[in-house]
Length: 63
Image (cartoon, rainbow, N blue to C red):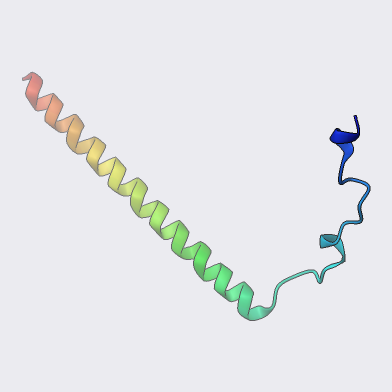
């Protein structure tokens, strides 16, 4: 049982840290999130185009 609760009795140092981000760090994180969203969107569009091309290919293959 002590193995399950090990570490919970220690104070939480992360709770004592300063909350929030500086403006420069927040702007950098927002740019990073926007770039990540752009890459994911392009990846999903590319996947959809590949699937459409494969579907057309197999449709013409059956004719």
